[in-house]
Image 1 (tube, rainbow, N blue to C red):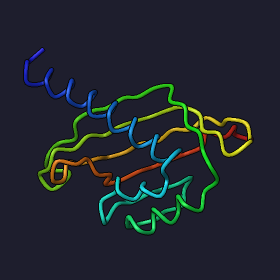
Image 2: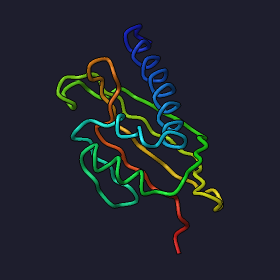
Image 3: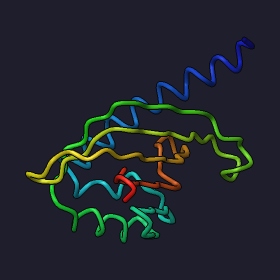
Image 4: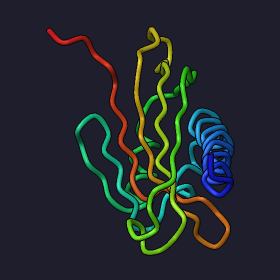
Length: 135
């Protein structure tokens, strides 16, 4: 494998691990800080319902019940520079379970596109979906 490609793969994996660790810890334990993860113009699609802007996203999360996330898989890849205004960006795909208050855990998937802004990773796009059985 080309050394440059290997370096990019390693960087995507390390970034995804660090980012998701901090993201889900904040979401579960310090939710009032979650909006800091999003660009001012960030987009959240939550089970098919869209919210735009970090303030609106922060309010959306504050209205959710208390959560506990457990991750079961994580994948990341580099997004071509041209796709995100010539900034380094990664696509991160997460699967796991989420428990809302005292309810049973439910499987979920979440996909992020993050970009590096002033040496901090910010969410450009976030798509979350509970994995409900098809009736």
